[in-house]
Each structure stands twice: as structure tokens, then as C-alpha cells.
Image 1: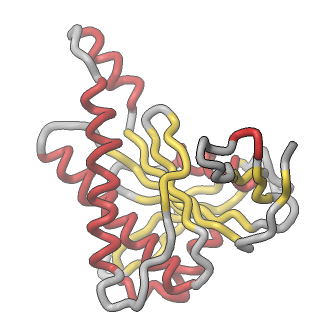
Image 2: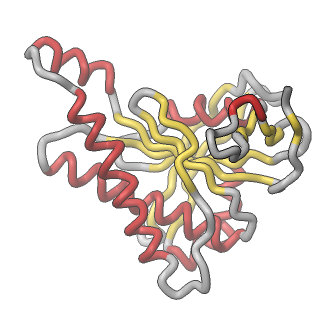
Amino acid sequence: MTVRLTEPTSVMYLSVDMVRSKQLKTAYMRRRESWLPLFRDLFETFPLIFVGKVAQRFLEEDEVPEYRVWKTLGDEIVFYAPVQDGRARTLLLAAFHDAIVQFDGRNKDMGGYGVKGCGWTVVLDGVNETIEIPEMASADGAAYEDVIGPDVDFGFVLSKHGRDGQTVIDLGLAELVETHGAAVELRPTPHEQVETPFRLESTAQTFLLAGTAA
């Protein structure tokens, strides 16, 4: 049985994943080496860098909004952020982008793999919704909640259009950055039109984050 919830009205998702991970795994296997340390490094180190960037971006703010790991899928970490305030959401997106740039640069300086970032918004309007699944509650009784809908699925299409060391975003976040980007020294630059098999419209414009001085 599922129970529909009503809050919040929208959520932001942020995902980081390894670039060309299949080729990377194949190369390691041919050398008879384990690629598990690479994944462990991503899962352990990137969240720490992200936390540090959040602290920097919110240094002058009264509070830090909620965000947490939503899921890990293979070589990808997806963060969930229900923050509703536009400025705070933009600051959190900027912190995530900072972490992508630093982690990607750090790995390449060490001769390692690259990563790419992705951010998108899911409006909980009935087409997309938050559900509670009592059957999956934790041992202490805490409810298990998830978000389902076509815009959730669209994010995984969007993430395939990312680039090394960059963050690809949807139109909703691009408009948010246009409004608040001066404060975080970021701007959205048009990227690619992508097919949207899970939504009513056939294509969607994507954007890459860039510094205002770029």
C-alpha cells in the first residue's frame, strides 16, 4: 500500500557520476586490476567535498537547507534537496557545481577518471508525487518516502548529456540561475535539445553552468 504525501511542492535532484565508466571498468579488467577502489573513492570523497562547498557557499546565510543522498545507482550518487527558497536552492546548486569542478580536477591531476554533474527540478503537481511506503519502513518505524513521476525519470535522460567537470541542468534550474546567479557568479549557457520520452513535450532544452566571467 502507498500513501500520497503533499509536501514539499517541488524538489531538486543533483547527481554525480563517473565519465565513461564502462570503458574504465574494461581497462581495469584487462589489466586484472579491481576497479572497486575508484567507486569507493567516489562514494566516500565526493560527499565530503560537497559538504565543504556547502559550508563555504552558506557561510553568510542564516541556515543550510536540507539535502541528503537519495540513491546510489552503480557509479552514480543522486542527492535530494527539498529546499523551496530560490536563493537557497541556487546556492546549493552552486555548491554542488563547485564540488564537481574540484573533484573532477583533482582526479585528472592524479591521472584518474572524470566526473560529470546533473541538476533538475521535479514539481510535485500530481503528475509527479511523493509517496510513503509503509512496507519499507525502517526497523525503528521511520517511514520510507520516495518520489515518482516522469520528471524524476527525465533527470536520468538529462544526465547522459553531461560533460567532464561540468554540470548540466534543466530549464527550471536555468531560470533560477538567471534570477539568482549573480550572487553565486554562475550563469546558464544553452547546451543541447534532448528527447523527453517520459513527458508530454517531445524535446527539452538543456543548459550547462558557467562562471559569469567565462
